[in-house]
Length: 117
Image 1 (tube, rainbow, N blue to C red):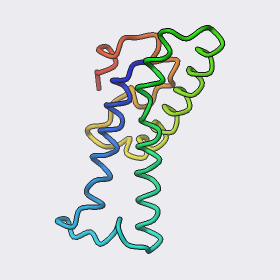
Image 2: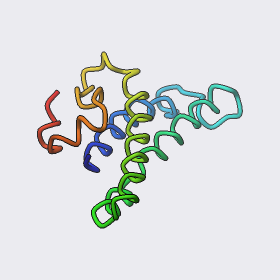
Image 3: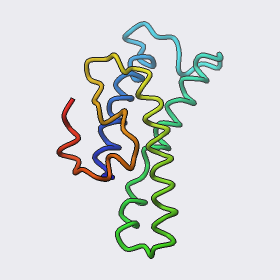
């Protein structure tokens, strides 16, 4: 698994969420204290937290076997969170097939190969 996978899926999700917060689109949501605004903020925060794996992936390169397994499990969990969110827009033209794959399926291929739609 590669940080580029996380960057692509996060960018895809952010592109779907950002207009929901944008006043220019007529949105009144996102920053108020109503339930819809709270849900949007919670979703965005969950996406941002799940996408913060760069340090884990960097640490993985020098980790011993036991720590490596823990890092792998954490990275897989973060990917699953993002994958679940992204699949809500599976019918979107910008959705990539890599967003449907499990973490271990992405591990077997370089990020450049996963770019295909």
